[in-house]
Image 1: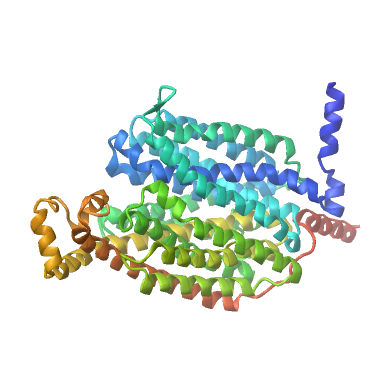
Image 2 (image 1 turned 30 degrees about the vertical axis):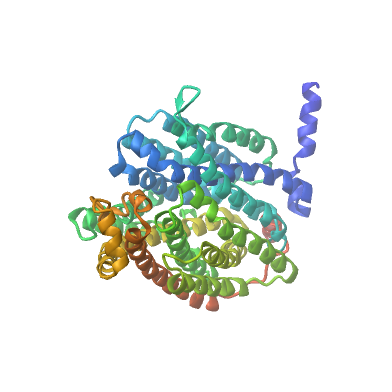
Length: 557
């Protein structure tokens, strides 16, 4: 085919700016763009599930078990900080260049991770990778807001959620398989955990470069570099202490320094943003929008409750039920299916009725119910089928809530703020998730030892325990309550009667975590009752922005 004809073909596939602005994109054009977005989102979501499954093997191979947490912390910090930056810059310069940049950075970071020779090196490369990850999710959601009217977004939610469901199933399988291989083509098995991102990333780059032709009018605006610096100064120490506070001690000099620097940074950021006005990273005027400010707080609370519970369930499956990381990932399928199916149903109901406020209310109520069931009903010897039923219920609650919050934020702000608003919703949810994970893990760590000791004393008085101990006098050598969370594999090697107190102690600590998570979800439920429902727009972000610009031009004429 000649160069001229190939250009003509690509022009025909790309929507013209005037057509998209006036009439919106066709279903086929939206699906074409969506294919590129899904590749980018798949890259980020698959990576997280694969790495979390393989991280113990990686830490053993690099002799850095004590530094394992830093690989997660580094990735989390850079991806969280980068998220609002991508949102703002894409509002000014357009989504495509930054989505391509995010994929490229992520792929380069993945390649660098495969060359790691220590956990500190791996943490540094994961930090670089996180800079790319920060744009993959938030920009994909912002682009969907650009091209799909809120009332019609339901038709496309299933595609997006299928990415998360697929990666949550594939991730543990692929991660477990690769980490379990000695070498593949002469390269250590775990290094393929990162290399597998390269072909996916290259395909995503090609597809996005080809199909992501979203109309954009560049806006002349200063870049808020000081806002970026101060938000980093504020958030990085707080994320750092949230992740490392358990090992440092929450009132240690290092932790107190982080608190002080973090508070100083947040105050400085607010002052800078007020001075920058519309050019701010997250313009302060958005917080005067009640829906935006209330939904931001709700995102923090949902993030805390969601990640607190979602982190606890795999721990329960691995420590109490003896499942491998791969198997525990697959056992989470009821939760993912509950979330995915409910989100599709909710999306269709929103599309049909135009009403959405009821769903976060119902969703948080269902989440509270599921957490209380985990608190009261799930014991160390509860049948797995019953636990999976509660997981599915929790997934249904999430399915009612997650997409609806993003929809509410995107619908409540002016179209030119679509990127900032979407990135802010992701940013606040991430902050909540980090805080929730830190608080709930701290509760778990601080109570599990005492609960195991209590359960052991109670069991030691029973004849069955005494007989088992007499038959295996050295079985408990080196085993203690505090060793469960660093390496729980010894529990599965113990006779059932001797293992029971360890499982009971862990289950008791988990009950407290679920009760606290239910309290956070209750606060989210109360807030969701008072959020005002704004009628959903029937035009896409591009159409709404074009209409606003035409009105402005008519006024000036």
